[in-house]
Length: 256
Length: 225
Ligand SMILES: Nc1ncnc2c1ncn2[C@@H]1O[C@H](COP(=O)(O)OP(=O)(O)OP(=O)(O)O)[C@@H](O)[C@H]1O
Ligand SMILES: [Mg+2]
Image (cartoon, rainbow over all chains, first blue to last red; front, side, top):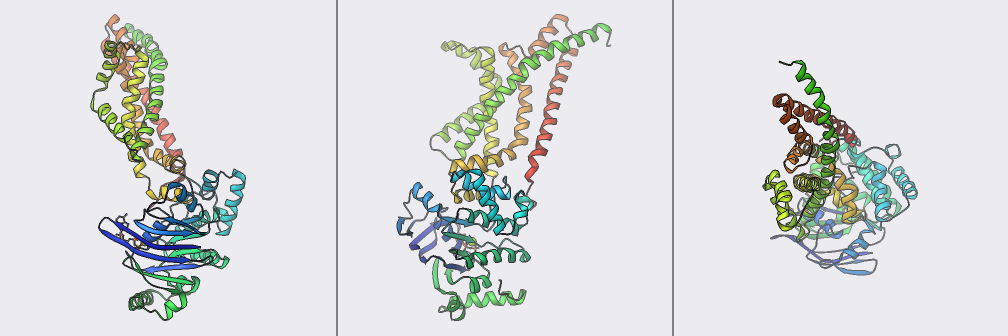
């Protein structure tokens, strides 16, 4: 469904992505792991054209695009098939939870208001926030805001959803509610590309794992084999460190 | 000190001064501020969106409008332009100058407020499929205007008082009227204090309106962190 070839991106002198190849099939839940600064966020941002790539080819649904030269129309067309969930939620601060979900439908897709509201309510119900539809983001907890953001992402029925560390800004007791929504999306067969530090999620919910280091994918494979028999020493070290960190702080739960 | 004659003068002149206040000062302020807001938003957006060429035009306009005295601007338009065969009536000249002058100051306020809105708001909007202008109109600008509101209210209050300068280009607003009355009865101190108090009254009302509106604008609260 999505195939990326040779994605490169530099910020000035700093080469952040050094030629990324990636294939995502329908229904895949791909976890992207890697140390801070390895380029995970930049990869997602390039995929959604929030960042302009220096080189790379993106094939989506059989159409191919040169990522360094892609035009506004194609960007808009591709964005209509994707959704993005940000680390810090980025809910529209001047809109209620329901309006956050319906805004794109009404304004971008020109959907009649009542139909959009109907979808919006269904999506909020989906993330367990029906009783919060008229709350503003500032009146919601972080976990609730992120669930509204997921509802907003679902509203346009995207073919793939990009998540950039969706639980990293949350207090530990709030990550569970967001992860369980994401788990249910995975079970529903949604295609997702998830940058995460939640090892439980990467291991048990995602079916594929990618490990990035210094702008390159150093290991990729199905979750089980990457976790149980990592081929690269670097991956082994990373996983060992993560688990040591978890064990000294709190026991790793299968939920993550 | 306050004898009967003075009291009578003060009471009589109160209505004589208030009338041009209601008929000229307030409409002049309102209309000029309305145009100033349009100018400010457009000028701020052009810079914020880094529109080529226009952003430099915007910078130039702000540079000139903020760097020259308001009184000079009024004189150039009203007394100067006729040299080029362009005659502008006093009130339109005042509206033109006040709008352009105020627009430049408010443009800076609005631009700073646009920059204060987190960039993630625009990105999130683009990601749900809205165009730049759609996100601007529905998400970023409303938040920026909320941030800008106290400063803009401040500028409006300043403008009420600045309209007194229009008396210098023959607009019969409150200041002009007061001067006329005072030149007849020679009670300068009493009358100029009186007109000052009327300006104070107008500004007090505006300040009250400002805090009431600010309360309402707070409806979606501040992020507590
Ligand atoms: N807009 C930018 N301008 C300059 N450098 C940037 C920019 N964005 C990211 N970088 C740099 O690119 C590198 C990769 O950043 P990126 O945010 O993609 O890392 P990450 O893997 O998402 O890290 P984290 O786990 O901390 O979120 C970092 O060295 C960062 O400093
Ligand atoms: Mg990141």
